[in-house]
Each structure stands twice: as structure tokens, then as C-alpha cells.
Image (cartoon, rainbow over all chains, first blue to last red):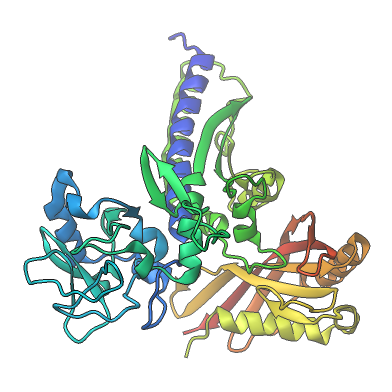
Length: 329
Length: 138
């Protein structure tokens, strides 16, 4: 009869459960990010876009981005980056342009760009287009953007052949991007929506970036982790994420964490099943070999798994939903 | 024709209005999402969080998670009205057009701290999450 270390086995099982929890947390995080609401800062005279629809795949844009490869977008368009997907990808032009007509003015005069310059308007359209090595990209294509999560558009300085970002923004968008208008009639510079991610400045995406996973952690024979969102505007402690998840007196709710968890339910169960199966198998084998698995780690229903989804300070709230999912809590 | 979670929202509002003590307590009425400024307190606001479909042969089950909030001028009112809502919905089988309500149960409290409204008045936001299971033949 062999000798078996039940504690060692139990620890191995917990490790497999930890991996399952880790994958589950990533799954919930990804789905929560897809549901996270975004501030719409662009002008779009031809109807608002729907975030979910805009995030669906578009093979055409995918191919255009693929042509950029690792080099990224052209440098002439890189002065100010805009995370288009975070804003529903809808930046249809609010100013009249068409092929050959000015898009960026200097000194208030009207100038015309030539065929060889970078930016052109689409003929008989209000939609500006961006010239890229992959060809012209217009607002219609961006509506179904599903590719890389960033595209650099626009130089905020007046220069022939480039966009003025401010011209693409709604008034609310200019506030978000450039701040309040001061006494001198000019905007402060950087608005509250400007964030720095990996050394690059972006407009928007603070809530998305705040959705993070924590864990998995062990406590006794439990494994648990968190998906957390805690976005706050600069200089403020108010949790913007909480307002979006649950609503407030002034804001209608746009839940993103809990729908993310609910959508992940089936996949989480699938991910955890192998761990349960492995546990049963190993424990049965251990018993056959005369081992004595510790009761704390042995259970007919598997190692308890706690997967908490929470916003800051709301841990108790979210754990109740996990009980609904049959994942403990 | 299969009906959607919109029918569940209608059912929730209809049921809330049909419970006399609750309707009397909701001075500011019932609102989806959030209420306009200057709405009187207390009022109720509801919002569907998620409503995934489960398809079986010949039928569809919708499991809708609905947040129902009470906004009130003081914490006591907010808790009292929240209790009335819980009494009305927890364990009830209210009618939903085109669907059979299998169960409605309260699955979580939603504790909210005091906030300040647009008129500078201190308000309390308290509520609960309810899970509504419905079934309909396809």
C-alpha cells in the first residue's frame, strides 16, 4: 500500500482551483469591460451609435489596422491619441467637408487641400475621412470598429492635412478633453477625461482601465478573487464606477459588472468543472491508496470557490449574486 | 410572437401600482432609470441589469435581474418603502404579458449612502435586486 500525503494532494487541488478562479476573473473582467459605459464626446449629426453594436467585429477595419502592423498609425496623425472604441467609434464630422475642401483652417480663412494631402472629406458628405497607409477610413467604417483598441487621429494644432480634434468633438466632449473655459475664454488644457496609460495620453477610458482583477486568494479551503472597478475623477473621491453600476439621483444606471458576471456564468462553470472532476478523481485514488485526505479540503461538492465581483466598498453586495450562481459566496 | 424583457418591466410597474399601500407611499411615482429633477420624494426607480435568455425545446426562459431603488428624503422613509416593495415582489408571481412568471425573489439588498440632489437636499437611496424568472412558449 502506498503512502500518500493528503495535504500535498489537497494543495495541488487548491492550485488547480486557483487557476480556474484566475481564468474566471479574467473572463468577468473582459465582459465587464465590454459593458462599461463610455462618454460620448464626438459630434455625430446622423444619429447616435450604440456602444454594443459598435464594438462588433468589422473585417474591413480589421484589415486596415492589420496593415499598420507594429508600426502603428502614421506619424502625421499621432499628436493626440483618441481611443475610438471607448467612445462608440462614432466621430462623424460635424462640419461640412468634401473632397478638396478645407478641414483645418489657419487664421480663419478658407483653404483647400489638394488631392495629395492627407485628409479629405468624402464627396457630398459631412463625414471626414482619415488617410492611412491602408487607404481612406471614414466614419461609417469606424461605426463597426472591432480591431485594435486605439487609433491615433488628429493633431490639435492647425496644420493643413490634419484634423483639429476640437472640431470633431461636441461641446461636452471639448469640456471632457480640454477642461473648463477660463476667464480668458480659453480652455484649461487637459480635461478630466484625459488619462495616461502606459505612457500614452488618451481621452477617455478611465472606467475601463479601473476594471481590474484581484486574486485569487486563499482563505482556508476557499479560493476567491475580485473584479473591481473604482474610477474617480481627478481630485475627487466620489466613485464614478458605483454611480454607473447602480445609478444615482442624477444618473441612470449603466450596469457593467453584474451583467459581465451573469454572462460569464456558463463559462465559469465549465472552467471550474475540470477542477472538481480532478478533485474527485484524485481523492478517490488517495482513498484507495489508504491516504487520509483532510476533511477541510475534501468535499463531495468540490472545493468551495468564491468569486466576488465588487465595486469599491460594496463587497457584501456582490457576494450575494455569487450564491445565485451556485459558486458559493 | 415571443415577448421580451420589456413585458417584465411593464409587469413590475403594473404590480407596484396594484399594491395600494405601496402606491400610496410612492408620492413621486415610479420611474425607469432615474427621475427628473424636482420629482417629489419618495419615489421608486427600477432598472433591468441583465436579462439573459435560456432556450428550451418549444419554450424560452428569461431570467431578469432588476434593481428597484427607493429615493427618499430620510432614511426611515427609504427603508419603509423598500420594505413595502420587498413585500410586494419577493415571492410573488405577478402577471407578465405573454409570459408565465415562475418566480420573483429578492436576491440582494442594495444599500446606498446619503446623497445630495440638485436642489441641495439630502436624500437616501436604498433598494434591492430582484430576480424574475419567466417562461413563454415559442
